[in-house]
Amino acid sequence: DSGVTQTPKHLITATGQRVTLRCSPRSGDLSVYWYQQSLDQGLQFLIQYYNGEERAKGNILERFSAQQFPDLHSELNLSSLELGDSALYFCASSVGGGTTQYFGPGTRLTVL
Amino acid sequence: GENVEQHPSTLSVQEGDSAVIKCTYSDSASNYFPWYKQELGKRPQLIIDIRSNVGEKKDQRIAVTLNKTAKHFSLHITETQPEDSAVYFCAASKISDGNKLVFGAGTILRVKS
Image 1 (tube, each protein chain N blue to C red):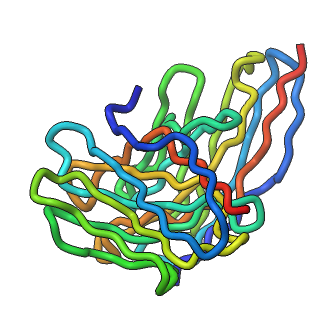
Image 2 (image 1 turned 180 degrees about the vertical axis):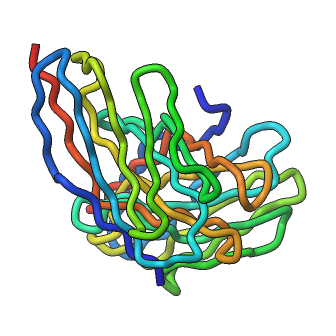
């Protein structure tokens, strides 16, 4: 157990819908990272927050957005869902921006 | 941006043999190189990491070597066991980029008993 929690574990929804994935970092960690894992794209970085502020952005679609709240938990919002958005979404946390990242158990999103 | 290539894509070894997985990176400014093990449907778990000021690091049966000049790093697993069977990912990052991890495509390691 890495200490990073993610909810829900599984999510099944329809195309065009909107979902919110939630992540709670390890106690004391200020940085939260979101990654997408799909069969064809592998593990891809989406976005990073540090202490409430966006720090780095990857190839995150405009339909996707994220935020980190004052209690340091983070939410990833995915809207206008497409079949290709089906993937495992992982959150990782670290103490700062240059330290080891620990991954949560992931949320498996299935878009039908 | 950074690009990480990983080889081989699959690796089968006999129990007790050694396994070596290699990665190359493109950005000479990258300074942190972790290796993750992922079992089916589970989270990536950090198994070892190395920073650019170190050439080699070892933890029991696992070791990582880094060649900054050639921009490649390798994972070595000795005395492999069936429970080592998993997908292994290498990654590279740099502090100036928020330390985001750029992953290789992964290596499926099968240890046959």
